[in-house]
Each structure stands twice: as structure tokens, then as C-alpha cells.
Image 1 (cartoon, rainbow, N blue to C red):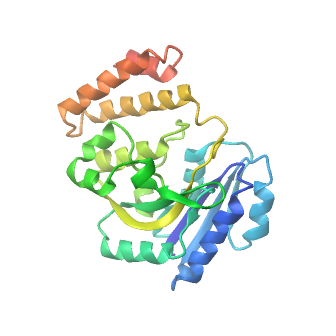
Image 2: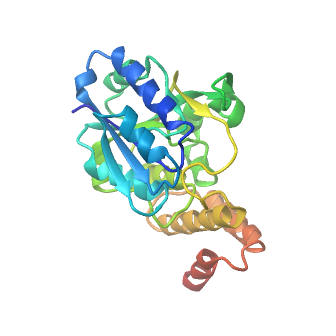
Length: 280
């Protein structure tokens, strides 16, 4: 098996059919369609997501969590079942482009040394109209330039999305941190680059569409301000531990300490911050 497409799905009844339809369209244009498996993780949905998954994907492998566990646990569940050489992560409210699988295949053939390749996306509104590009309008950064010239900036903040193709072998030593309720992709990229000493690149050709919308995406509580900051503190604390064994520049370490102390004013109730202070 070449590709395993993993889709975590939580309460996405309005989008899951469109997402899966886009995969079918891309498979029709891909000459190795028989080498692609689709793994959907129904993460305790309480709407009609489950029924719609069963209706439109008779060939897909479906994993069902009885209770909502969040995106990191869902992606890990999918990875454990994946048999593909490469894993493609796609959120259930996003879409593949019609030529995505062909473009991804050409990219991995030209860059076999890469452990992960971040994929380019358009931004679409809830009705599917293109309103911009993800890295040009939402995250205003050139990912490849950053990865080549200053990858340590990824230690200070996330500029890479989870939409990516990753070697399955990466997950023999790394998995998503299930203690995080948000920013789990940032945490994975940091550990892949600086702990595993892996290689990440960017595919600028548009391979998917990112849906801009409001409301919960995959889990009911993963976008609260306190939760997000708590997860940032957790990741920063892990980076500081990495600094003991990895060549992280001293000025970056200083900026992380400064950021943690600034955030601490908002985190009097944060268990992650207290744990870091007690163990610093």
C-alpha cells in the first residue's frame, strides 16, 4: 500500500460528504488508486456524521471512538491501522484537489529523503468558494524559506498546518501527544525536526482546500483561550527539555522563557504551567 489517508471526524455532518467526494475525484485521476486506503476515525460524533460516513464510503475503513477523544487520539488511532508507506492527514471539513494524489506522488518521488511534506491549500468559505491561499493569506509566511533558512523559528510558533504527507515509519518512534487539546501538529513537527532530526519540506502546488468556518472543528473544547495557552506552555516546556540535548540557539531558549513568563499572567489556573514551574 502506498498511501493511507487518515480523516478524524467529529460532528462534521455538513462537510464529511464533500470531503470524501473530493477523495473519490482525486482517486479517479490517480493511476495507482488501488494503492490508496482511506481510514476515517469517527471521534464520538453526536450528529449524523456516522450515518453519512457509512452511506458514502462502503470501501473505507472506519474506526469509531465511543467517546470524543480529540484530534491527536484520532490521528493516532488511524496511524496504528495504516498500512501505507505514506500517511496523508486530511481534516474532515477540508478537501483534496482533483489532482492532489498525483501531485503528492510526484513530490514524494522527487524528494524521497523527506520525512514529511507540508501541502499547499486554497482557502474556501463554508459554501466552497475560493477566497485565498492558506500560506499567502491565513498564515502569511513562505514555509519552505522558513524551513531552509530558520527552522528554529518553528520553536517559537507554528507556521505549518497538519495537511501533510508523512512517512509511516516516522510514527514508529513518534505519535501525536494525546494530552494536547490543540496545536498537536506543531508539537509533532518540533519533535520530528529537533528530536528525531528529520526532514520537512513544503509542496507549494495546491493539493487541497482549507475550509474557513466558525464553531467546533474536531473536538468540543479544543479552541478555548485558556486551553490553547495551556497547550502552548506544555509545548514550550517540552522544547526547553529538548534544549538539554539538542542544539537549540540560546537566544531562542531565552525567548521561550520570556514568552512563558508573559503567558503565566493568564494561566493562574494552568496545571501545565504549575508543573513546569515545579520541575524547572
